[in-house]
Amino acid sequence: MKALTWQGKRSVSVEEVPDPVIQEPTDAIVRITSTAICGSDLHLYEVLGPYMHKGDVIGHEPMGIIVEVGSAVTNLTTGDRVVIPFGIACGECFMCRRGLQSQCETTQVKEKGSGAALFGYSELYGSVPGGQAEYLRVPFADYGPVKVGTELPDERYLFLSDILPTAWQGVKYADVPEGGTLAVFGLGPVGQFGSRIGRYLGQRVIAVDPVPERRAMAARHGVETLDYSKTVADELRDMTEGRGPDAVLDAVGMEAHGSPVTGLAHQALGLLPDKLAQKAMETAGVDRLAALHAALHAVRRGGTVSLSGVYGGQASPMPMLSMFDKQIQLRMGQCNVRNWTDELLPLVEDDADPLGVMDLVTHRAGLGEAPALYEKFQKKEDGCIKVVLNP
Image 1 (cartoon, rainbow, N blue to C red):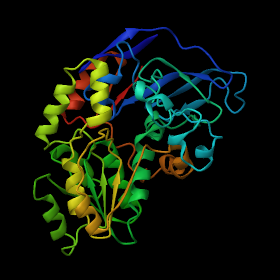
Image 2 (image 1 turned 180 degrees about the vertical axis):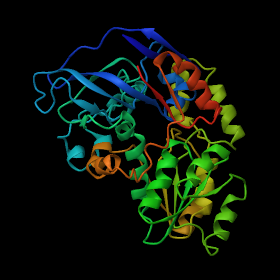
Image 3 (image 1 turned 120 degrees about the vertical axis):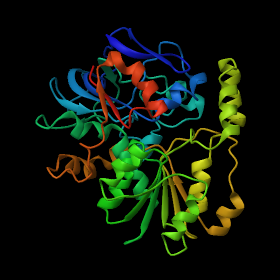
């Protein structure tokens, strides 16, 4: 089959790779009909290269049609249409029973000290072949895949794989009081959905992003927007009676702009041999924290900062004095996708499209165009906000 493979820093290519096969009785094989490029994929493209291997199949936002199931899979059959959550969970362990599927004890990558295995996301998360491919082997198919209807287009359902539940969890973790204000830092796909979810839940939402096209998309959904600047925290306080927003959702993560020293550190890591680079990241890795520090500075006293953006540094400096003094609550973590599916499925199937799932994709292409679109997405060129590939 054809699949998008990692070849090196800022280098991906479509290659012929072996077709996936059933390996365990709980496996299924899915023919991919749509698969998206996620902001998290850009971390593999750039910062997390030391954990990648040439030829790794990437991608973790797929959906498609079941073509084969293992003998233990009784809830799915050939021809079923399914969305595949990006995290791989068993559904039966201590963590899964508590709605913490991202910490699944069955698939935890213990040798790396990581949580549940993820599709297409480096040896940190199990080196499981990903979904930017024609076919995908899905472990624990008796639990993970979300069976959906056949009448609505893929885009109604595709984002249930990652970014929609990730944004939903981020807003839920933000715990905005009734009638309160949520600030969203970053208007990539998760920030777009987080902003819309906040509006859907009756919150005032102010979103911050330096890219005009992203601000314009958010404004279409009733979101107030600000350009990112060094004074953005002051601007937010001016808009909220001098206090700051009740909560801030950081949907930016480790590759935020405005951290030149850390940017140089990321470049230096890319010059080290993989094992040395891994050791450096695991003991002294530092993230670009401009967005996170701005969020902590902006949120009101006693407020909450919720992290949906991915961070990976072990030695990232945090303003602990200010955080303690302001009594800030901090919540974060990989999304527990299946914990939110039942709440989100009726919303994506609603004719009114209350979360605007049909107003996110800016670029659609075949798998062969993926390398060029990775570059375009990373550089934020051509108004690129969300890319969907159709293998």
